Length: 172
Image (tube, rainbow, N blue to C red; front, side):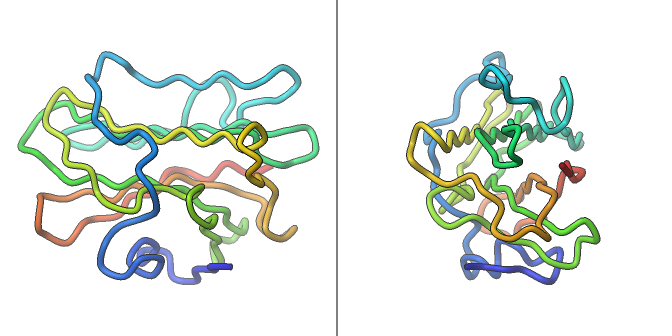
């Protein structure tokens, strides 16, 4: 179990100097294939009808998740849409968090995010889409105190230290 207690060292703590946990989407796609999350019948989106969004100068980071009535996660989806500027390395991930933000838990591989950064140019999108129940993975909270989730983006020019951005918490 990985529990993080310092907010802005998430991916460095989880993986050393290289960002996050397994590129499920692999190859970047064109930005016009914008992500949207549809929850299974009976489950609801954590952030209501829209995603948690972080708008940056050169792109947009989106995060959405579906919760079951019992409080587990059914699905988590993250995307970075590179709109302009020079190429950047991007790593996406997510975590469980306490309401006060003092503790976090990154799900174990391969359900927490990218293992290696993906290089994106303007007009490309990188997406991770984790579906728990059908894959036999566990979307349950690691402990009752972890009542919130948040998306994580690490981004920076190739071969330089990445900056970390977090979405707003979604608590349930």
